[in-house]
Image (cartoon, rainbow, N blue to C red; front, side, top):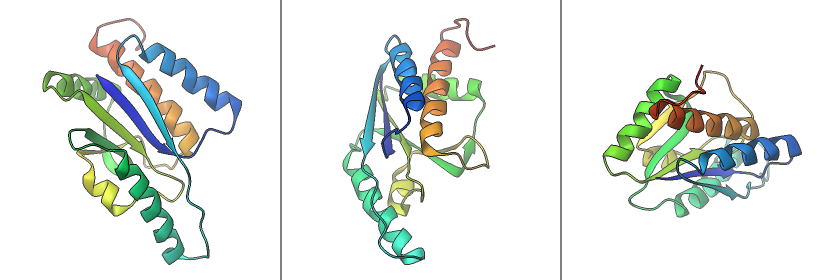
Length: 158
């Protein structure tokens, strides 16, 4: 299974890069993980109109990295909340259904464009709280890793 994390922005702090590198290394035993980092768009001006332009630009860049046959899971506050076991079941279900290309999408600091949200096959929420996207990338990778461990009945989960 190919698991892609499509995200806006680069990890600036070494501790986030180290954590992500560790989970990427662990995931290689279960899937083909890939992180696609896209450049943050600069906001010119203030207000909702300027923010909308940023979300649209970033959204176009995200959509350019998504293929027709990818199963797309966007991370959104208003998405569906799953337990770790339910996420493991979902990933296992996708594998059984032959959906071998899965893309998780993490938007920038202003969120996702409507077009990206509309393209999603599933909208996933980790919490009603907002997290920095650098932290969310690490949390997401850990949960994907945990999902594979759960699905295979391997020790780690508890």
